[in-house]
Length: 451
Image (tube, rainbow, N blue to C red; front, side, top):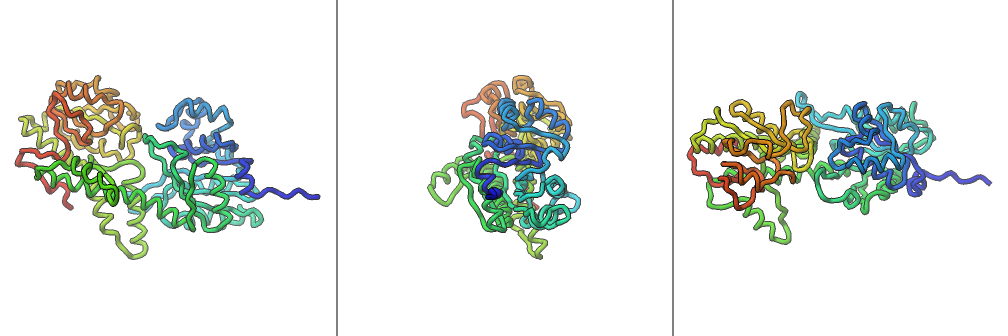
């Protein structure tokens, strides 16, 4: 009697399957280790030879993956390579490569996704295979970019070895405190077999999955999440200039509004938005709308407002320096933070660095960040406020509230602190001004945020 061959879904449910991760960055590496811990045979491919060498030596470059986590994964069988053959013949593939916008053309940058799909098509075997896109892409990209390569190209994908294509957008929060397994994942596919296979894979590593009826719905859900955050941050950023003219505290007002148990979620002002998601993903939607002959003007206005926040911070700091009798051209400023958010070393689209770069044109700026690799910033960095001359600085500018920053020490040693995060202790020896405070200086320029 012939033994029935296990289906792809069965192999995934039984964890008797191999998983190939294409792209070992902040998304791919954690996924690889989670699948390894769940019992899958996992291999990872990355084009960066130096990155792979670090991994194989047990040296993690991802903020949320400790060297101990990596060592445990390697001991459990995870392997990585810079040659695509490392992921040859896998039962499932996850594409986790970066995307972005091309500033020159105004179009989504999907070249890494296309290259990853080519790798999967070349390395996939001759039996039923799952291919999952976890990179953040514009709505429709999975079918328009990935499918023609890994599904429709029958020269490399035999008809008797169906490819199950799914879209499972990443939902990681670098530097956050929600464990990976507690973050629900959206699972989108255009066929039931693909959806079932993807659910079987991701149900092995997270407590909850939410299936949707198409890859395009999953893509739209991901871009919607980050667009929602972007427009709400723009709203409170725009309130900063209003609050400066009122006897009211915008931060306290937001906290007060958040006491309502429904209909409100708190977002807070800051020097701008950064990272790989909020400044980029909404532009995918705007571009897509233009492709269909439409326009998302509200979204585009919100994006432009957030992009102007670094200029507002510099304008306010220079105004307050002049009010203290200090010329911005002769000022010394200690800027706390270079990353785009707290407790990570990622500087992509960092508003903190944009502020520092603007100040460099006039003031003498010392940047402090315990997480950022200075090789990627083209500037020398201090690691701790204790290494900086706080008492001699004309201003201390708090741009990123890393947990490592001893803000009580900053408040004791600094003379004047401009706090863009509302993070300084209430009792400080320093003169502290928070973004949005009433500043008694006639030269404030409310037009900085105007188009």
